[in-house]
Image (cartoon, rainbow, N blue to C red; front, side):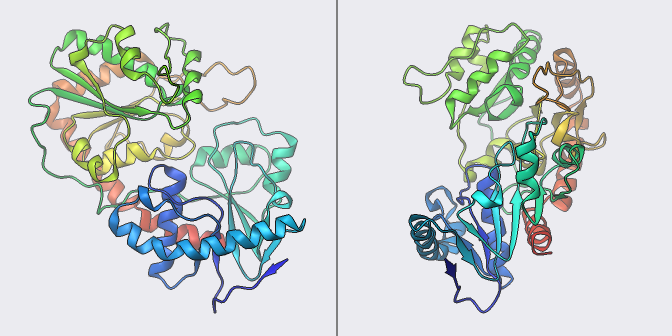
Length: 398
């Protein structure tokens, strides 16, 4: 079945849902905003999740809602007839899974140009995964780590780095919500690859030296069962559990079970976009001892943009972000146990090295602030969403 658009120019179609809750959604949001600013023709197959967006973003994206419903209906009509929808003259983007699935032939639609977009952690690509990746005209990823994994299997790809929005995250005044506490921030989906167990173990040791230390976390998981991957931790901590209703992770219980004083830790959970920058500005240090990042770590970039000094593990996607002049670096990386071959290039950070980084920032606060401002300058000049979107659209349309 053929779908002829009423646009006088080539449409640019995204097959994933727009939201401001996570990286995939933000990639879509900022790509569409760029196209709308520059006279492009963004199209969606799923209505955007407008309720997650800031009012100014919502107003700009809302006109895409009804056309998305229309296009989605055409796709379902074609599917019911055992056909695939052909969107003439379109560049169509497809979000791919951890094994680069599905291939183009399994997609319910196709255009003149078909681009697979990947952000994956698995490094052992099956023969089917390799074939699926090669079925697209182009594959675009967001880190040199992902690019290297694909190259290991002879698959060419283009790397376009994600970014931050300077109107949302930038240096600013600090409030007194935490008083004179030394505040360490850690954020991200809680799971083994994100390394929150390393944060907990390091902070426990650090807090025993410094009673004024406070760990503020934005830990949670929209897919709670995946958080139980933390049971693979080699650190001997009390195990992470889910809440009794299974709706999320019991972060407070995990901290308590591992002997963190209640007064030394605060889990905020999900942070709305408008509250993110004020929280980050109120902290003294952010720590990210992640074992693997398929991109460059959006939360880390947002912290840097706000002028917060960050500690980053020297592995995978973080290697596209770190710099001795703008970040603290966890360089003592050991291989992660990898019987399946799916954790090649991952890194296990040293708990003691993270404690040392916390101590250095605590004892050298002026230097830490200078490093944070250097990081902000670098991110706001080199890792912005508007830069990403322009490069992303240009790359996909080649």
